Length: 317
Ligand SMILES: NC(=O)c1ccc[n+]([C@@H]2O[C@H](COP(=O)([O-])OP(=O)(O)OC[C@H]3O[C@@H](n4cnc5c(N)ncnc54)[C@H](O)[C@@H]3O)[C@@H](O)[C@H]2O)c1
Image (tube, rainbow, N blue to C red; front, side):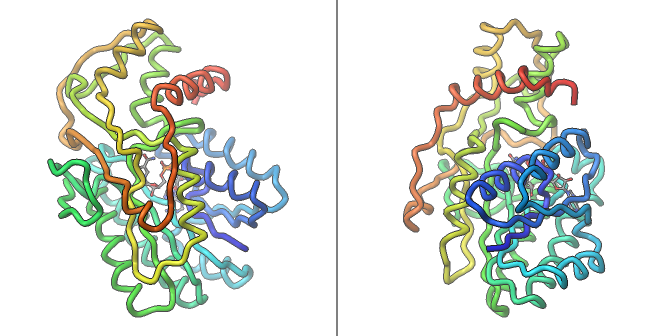
């Protein structure tokens, strides 16, 4: 089976592709190697993927329809997994246009291409941020959506566009609402790697909202297992799944527990306007479809990720 993974140089795209290559799938990866965070980190991921003879990479932006079209004419793609996006909630206040381009126009381009090339399945990344501030924890997929920033709006719109197309095309859509994914090859703009970097480089870590946030951290290997299972199932309707561990952690407690063992300078600062207080998803819908998983222990994977981070000198990126 031939799979197109967009955003393949990114954290989730890379991790998923490595796993699919081990399972002998052929992966066609595209990414524009955007400089939102260190491009060298993205290139390191691509170099590892290129060691497998079933991996093919092209530097293409999902906003460039002509290049996308040409790419598709030459390949026989069965499934599209769209992970390319301008990620990050806070940055959406600085550069909202990038979210419109990559997350909305890019998404529309891929949908059009899926239609013209008879793609059977289109799996795409949404986000827990579509829920906004909501207190009905754990949040079910059927919960009312209340996006609080352009990033979340772009993801909600993806879901709505997929819904419209599911009913009028032969492509079947599946949306994935990821909840704070962490682990090896993670993103340097996220809480965990910022904390690790401050520790290793002996700098101060600035903890937003005095640490009073809760996040439903979900380990990358769990995410990869779930996405692989979803990829191998057929769904009649446009389905959207929470990809979460259903086990929210308090950020202050994590930072404090880490500080006890690792001596890092932490400065508590006020809340950023982009942030939401708590994420906590319900993951029972997946089991209704026979997708069951024993989720990883948070602290075990947190320290495993820290060891990997130091060993591979990721603080240089
Ligand atoms: N990591 C998380 O916790 C999390 C949570 C919720 C949702 N998501 C979503 O999951 C997906 C993957 O996230 P990630 O954490 O791997 O982020 P990431 O930033 O590491 O990966 C995204 C990749 O997309 C690429 N990209 C950006 N614009 C592009 C464009 N116009 N054309 C082609 N490629 C482009 C980037 O270069 C990057 O390599 C994204 O859609 C993100 O919004 C992630």
